[in-house]
Length: 226
Image (tube, rainbow, N blue to C red; front, side, top):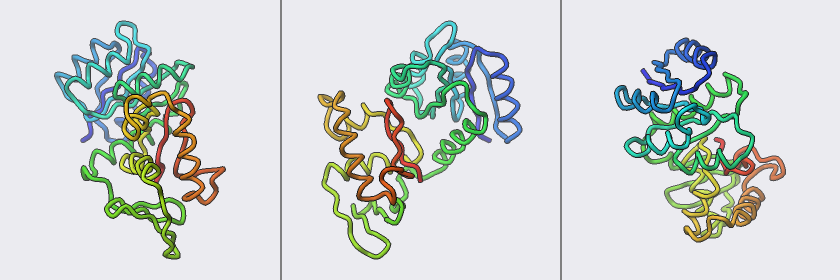
């Protein structure tokens, strides 16, 4: 059974999530402070953490850093903060996804299901994936339309695409993409990402103006939606 640690200082949120998660056969631990969360995670290591950023004792970003010091467990952030800077900081500290407050329980459950599916997946991504009318083969670095026509990608276009495809459903931060593809000295060049994602959508999406698979999370990053 998947063990989820829910961390929030609002008792009604803890109660609602505990009821909803247990009804779906998750094993649930709860904590109301950052210190209690770190202690609970150490004594009963969870398979997934749902974490509020606005905790009364330790900032949620610091809790993420504390967890990342010893575990790679997926972390989904709950954020009531309006600015994207806090969410970006959480993602850069090691969070895997975020849900903005006020949130719908079904949305959070969908994010949890996506993460838990990845927990049970092989360490390597599925070698072939679909984007619209295209099949992307991660093994031989090829993209083909359903009619067999090969779609040519530049090396950088491929690098950006592969980073997203190897983390299906996961939000990949702008900073992470820029660092992995261009290097640490390019972490502020977000215009690069806008240009290359626009190019990829024109080549791969059925309707580039309304992408269904290569999704922008404004101010934060990008996501491949299978």
